[in-house]
Image 1 (cartoon, one colour):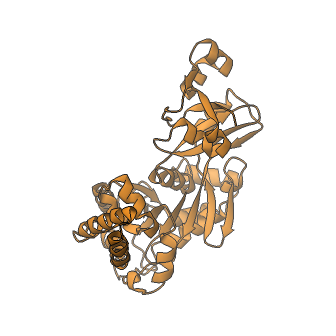
Image 2: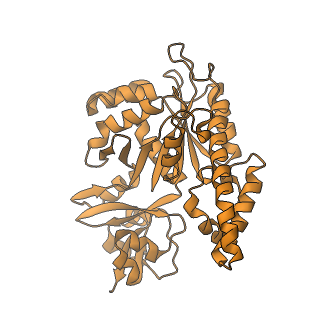
Image 3: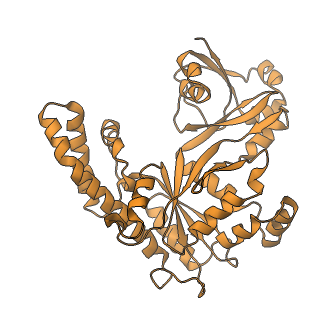
Amino acid sequence: MEAGIVGLPNVGKSTLFNALTASKAAQSENYPFCTIEPNEGIVSVPDDRLTRITQYIVPKKVIPTTLKLVDIAGIVKGASEGEGLGNKFLSHIRQVDAIVQVVRCFNDPDVIHVAGTVDPLADMETIETELMLADIQTLENALPKAEKMARGGDKEAKLRVDAIKKCNEHLATDQPLRTMELPDAEKIAISSYGLMSAKPVLYVANVSENDLEGKDPLVQKVRDQAAKVGADVVCVCAKLESELAELDEPDRAEMLAEVGLEEPALHTIARGAYKTLGLESYFTAGEKEVRAWPIPRGATAPQAAGVIHSDFERGFIRCEVYTLEDLETYKSEKEIRQAGKLRVEGKTYVMNDGDICHFLFNV
């Protein structure tokens, strides 16, 4: 699963991404970061539950879950028609699973806004419009071929035609596709199109160093607009993050304390993107390692086991489960078992965020 970082020119997108990729804090064993390509990176998702587990189960390694961040080319009005780096932007954003949009919420006369004035709502609308225009073009191009196949009796093509028409009708109301519901079969039928306005979005309000809590009216506008589409908002000062990324651990901790922050933006953005992607974590815990594993919300126990290895899902027998709260109450897995708190779940069990599991399988 990966999230693409997007934004208009001069909103702080590249500053933020570069700070994340250069962060020395992210190179520790618990929160590793490695650059894959100049515009891609793997970032760990900080989770304090890992630390809580290791207070009772001491492992040789602690492994958090990760996600990929992709720095997508800057966007300008007309990107859907190839303006600026529009074509590059479109090709990259089709491949990601979620969008992290950086929105400028600070005034600085030395950093000129591409539109001449700082207006986060206009920025959000510009990108949303480009996504929808690109989707309209994609759907219009796809419809004739789908209709031809449907006339030939292709059942999936008929589903595709129905889905395309519904999407076009929805886009005609100036609403992104993420705000509409389609039957699962129709979603699958058009999944190969990579429709961009259907992707979930996380808004990152890039604030000034004097407004780290995001109290500026500009930020409130972002929150209000995000609430209308069911999106989350994270406040970040990209300038501050770029400075933090240059510091060693002791100096970074001191600077965070001075500005009243508990953690760098890397942690906040990673958790926000993880949630936006529809992911949650379960844990495996033993002397070898304590590890977080990513699963989509609603995953069953066999599907969760398959994240570790496909053989685990194929040969799934049962799952032994307990909670972190059980561990903190009884202090060890042995005591949890003796207290009758270790649950045995089968193939239909739907995983809960934070489950600690052992899988039994046979292949």
